Length: 246
Ligand code: 13P
Image (cartoon, rainbow, N blue to C red; front, top):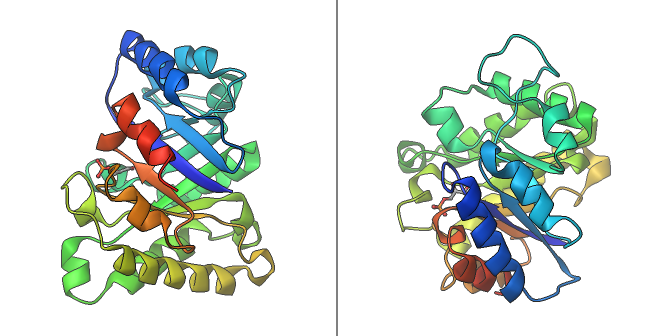
């Protein structure tokens, strides 16, 4: 089942969240063939879980800590997220990596913690523009994936991956669907090598300047098993259109 996910990043207060979700639920068509996921900021998770309860729309967090509890000022743990109703968590988003210095090793610890807690991670990978220009796209993406699964190679089926080229995020310039498909096929190959038994069980999503106009172009391709949407998910009409784009 394909997954269409909204990453709101650092947007929307509690009241804005409630207003958005009420409108979104009004206009969202009933689907049985796709999963819809909203990842609001931490402060909005509680109200979102109440509004979304019983609707089938999934709730996810944008980050987590790898310890269950303890002296980690400012962090949020997986048991906290689970209790509030999060079934997903975005791990290793490029903004976490590049603005907040998250390393592949830290991402690996978070993936392991998610697997232990039974919250499905959406592992984000993607190259910077200088990597692409240097012909390093595959190498960068492969390294990110191999380190992320280090020690939990047999559990690739419990993770989804979002390919988000850094140069396409928030720029209005998406990857071409053909370029995305090429990287998605490569990621599928890497996953096959890491865990041959779980072939096909990890969904590979595309993210980076997806909007209602270009979403159908991505979703035409079977290799693209979902979308992770930033800016265009902040408006309920726009996100509902993206969910409806295939
Ligand atoms: P934009 O859709 O704003 O480019 O953001 C993509 C993204 O980072 C989703 O995680």
